Image 1 (spheres, rainbow, N blue to C red):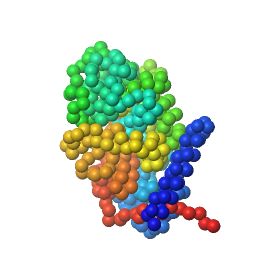
Image 2 (cartoon, rainbow, N blue to C red):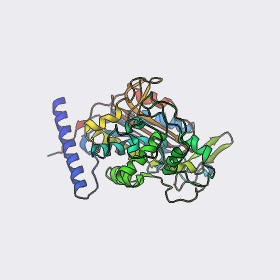
Image 3 (tube, one colour):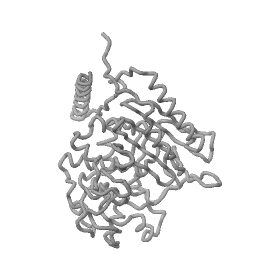
Image 4 (cartoon, rainbow, N blue to C red):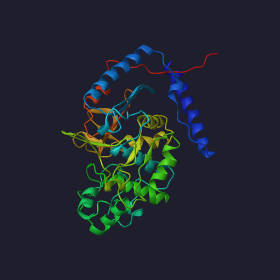
Length: 397
């Protein structure tokens, strides 16, 4: 039975990918593998119990302040999705959050920036071991490769600290190009040696966005839309760009505003001059679009398996505090065969988890700075209720 299942699944994926790439070749939108139409659920009782378990957990979190959206999937199918709370917490009871609302992903944006770099590698337009000065010759640092940026092993200083010191007018957006000019002019001392130990630093992925732009001669936000969001049907996802802005707006132009949480109550987060830097943050998306991206990764719809697998390999030989980093994904010895990322920036928090051992996926997007409970890991890791492997769907005669 397993051999028959594997054969049919491989055939389904082959047909789906053929349709995807043929559509791309003829100018049509790409096609995402719809596992809900491929698989037939043979155990609705277990699925229902799993959904009830998820609702009990996340409704409990919501009663304690979780404000946002949740999507949980297992064995290639969505088990539970729900929206909690309000778009603007300063005017409660007025505008409820919806499942198709886009939230800022903050650092969860990095998995998408990495995917863009991997697409260019697959096309032969860059190599992971290229010196980054091949694309950004202004940088005054030697021996740093694209791979080191992807793995957070460049040793470079923090750009936000540099901007806080040398960017006097906070009403003017600070961009990727402004960051590079400042690095070239000030040449701050690096934090570490290129290729050294893993040290998480946003500058790495901000520079990767510039590498994408210079390798393609295309704006980063346009490349992401044309090569990732549109082909995967991620219709609510976008990169927020301040490229043409001369002044920082008071608030970001989005329906779901971020909030800082204080004892006196929530305060709507204002826009920030550092929001002009792309690649390390500032992507907006929904839980349903993130699920589409997860499906595409499972089906190798963007990259062949041999290339996509690079994203989930530890980039450092030594695990720092039991943690490591691939290409846009975190990993920990506490959660074997599980890849994840956290996001936290200017009024938003988020979490994306891919448990490959049990084929589980969880996305949580919030518009507050309130912590997402650590108990989400207990939920994802709980094997007391396990869905069976999905059987392939077969049409009736």
